[in-house]
Image (cartoon, rainbow, N blue to C red):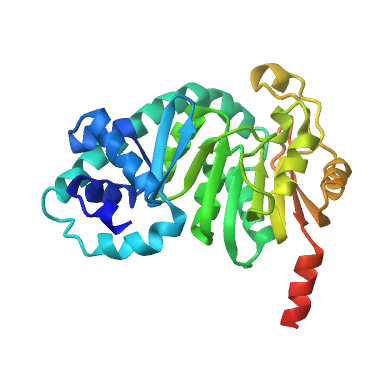
Length: 317
């Protein structure tokens, strides 16, 4: 590991990745070196176990490996990042992020009218987010995943409360928006992955909080998605689902690509219980301002009460 670090370009790469994940193209632009040379350095860092690589469509992104951060942080903190070349690298990193943010904003602007229409039909997002925080309470969050993260709004709300946060989405374009939004919020170390919510690429019990926020109504098989989400919940962990209650706005199928017109509270609760979760609670958040066609937002919170979790609780007692 230390041999891999002991080279100037690789050390500069690690200093950049300490501020968040980057693509090969990003690093090529920032460091002013050829793509083959940057790829070679990245290969050595991956082989040394310092950096991990993940695919996002045709792109490859690199980030510090979680297990190596304890070793890398003291090395990077000992660098003088206020003088060249590290200060110049940081200035070019800021320029890359600014371009990324502009591209994401342009993409989001094309979607904004459609989403503004949907938001006008239910309570303000701030009200829903306050309800989410209240439902989760002050229990520590070690590891969080937001399935179908979209623009990263839930990650922006919950990642500051978690020791480790991950977002999964099938769309590279949406992940680009999420990445720009999280960077602007100072949350550059959130792990963003491209993948299918019906087959998330993570092991059983990987997260103690799993979030499925306003995703189910887009899916042909929401029950399957919840089974996969429940598989990711660690012993004693929780699964939070946020979606619409049943409604009759057929127009949302065409204008918003909704597959399902909301879900009954018992329907989702039963799916969660069948997926192996317990203690399912739900809460409805309905508009109170006389909206012509109001949509009610429902929150479901379920826990994984396994034998291992019960034994742990007994041991503590």
